[in-house]
Length: 85
Image (cartoon, rainbow, N blue to C red; front, side):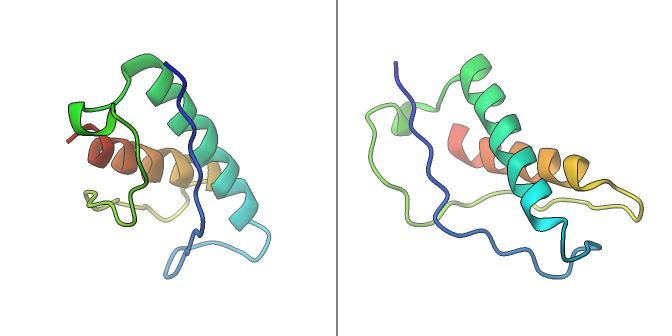
């Protein structure tokens, strides 16, 4: 099964991040989502393919001092949970 993931737009508001952290968060999201999708696959509804204009995902708890990589991993985990529904 080939999985193609495209994130059209990533908005990071209200997070304890600096100007240079956005690309680091994005890279961490992409890496972790790729890992999760490779290891766990997709939910039944997503297996047939198609675009998803909006995805319901659980909230993410960000702690002061979380690195951009850790924030990205948390976001990816939440998004993956939405994909598995």
